[in-house]
Image 1: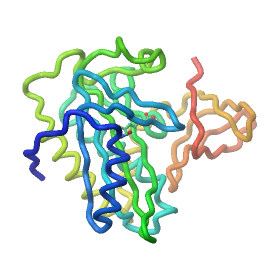
Image 2 (image 1 turned 90 degrees about the vertical axis):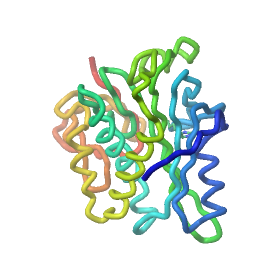
Image 3 (image 1 turned 120 degrees about the horizontal axis):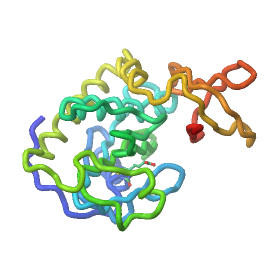
Length: 244
Ligand code: BTN
């Protein structure tokens, strides 16, 4: 895939735009990309800081390759795996994924992913949005972002980085994984990059605080944690916190 287009300077949220594209072209794969968002959205209703000097924010709308509702949660894993693999071709230090959708590089969150279902006239689609912090500073971001977020390249984007080439590589790999979705080849790559296997985390189950040790993921992309009673908790939407 070769992209030559100029990206629009700023949009509200590429996920919202990709949803609109899906409604216009429900049978096509649509991509919306930008370098700034004025209303970038994160998981659990949070906002996503999208005003970095060099940020890349993009969304892909696809028709799921199988039964939509069942496989929907796996799209976040597919998108994360794709990103980690493409970035590891450029960067020397490894990247890891904090379950389920946060990509970390050198101890900082450099990317977040938000997958959403879209339905229009009986056709189901999935919008996967990826925010990549290329370079810049979080000095003007909120405290939460300042505490965890970081960039891939530090403050300055090297001239050698070509974002269209990067997007092209990303889309190619995403497309390939998507075509072969049933093989779920991305799952084992995801698990290899999963942060904290064997480490202690806290999380809540039915409003009760639990502690346990990360074991890995299951076929549905859920996180398996061995709790203090030595039984397995299966997490699907909860946030996890590493115990220090
Ligand atoms: C998170 O970290 O909670 C997920 C962040 C997802 C951000 C991306 S940026 C592109 C797309 N458009 C949005 O409004 N959100 C996603």
